[in-house]
Image (spheres, rainbow, N blue to C red):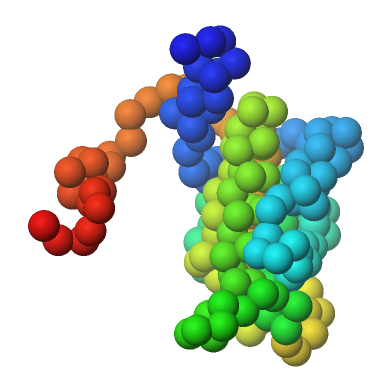
Amino acid sequence: MDEKLKNFYELFERRKSVREFQDRVIEPDVLERLLMTLRRAQSAANRQPWRFIVIEKKDRAELNEALTKEGFRGAPVIIAACAEPKEAWIRKPDKVNYAWVDVTIAVTEMICAATAEGLGTCWIASLEPARVKEILRIPDGIEIVALIAIGWPKEELKKEEKARKPLEEIIRYGKWQG
């Protein structure tokens, strides 16, 4: 395995949910690279049914009150990842709307980019959605998929084994059953 490929896999071994952040801003050029990652992400039929709101710590007093856990409040940046279902590709046979899938792909790619930058991230689902929509003035028809906390972690991101189900429990070959 060549060095670049090895580094790629190590990135995933270092990535973890971070809930405690240094009191340190994210430099504008670093943040710009992360935002460009969101912009470049793949989406079904290239519909890009996403919108993102960048909220810096200095502008977050009210938003912090809508988070149901405190650990994320120290992050210098929180990004609200939103889906616009009317803009999304819809799979015809079963009418599945891909807005949330597309937003999730974009956020996952940004989280990986943040890890490569040495930043920590955490996908925040512990929130009051109606209150967050009100605070961020998100219009009807736009759905909050998640908030993503981003910042310099208090503890170094290092390679560690995470508790995960064994492959035999989650992978099937050819068909679901025999």
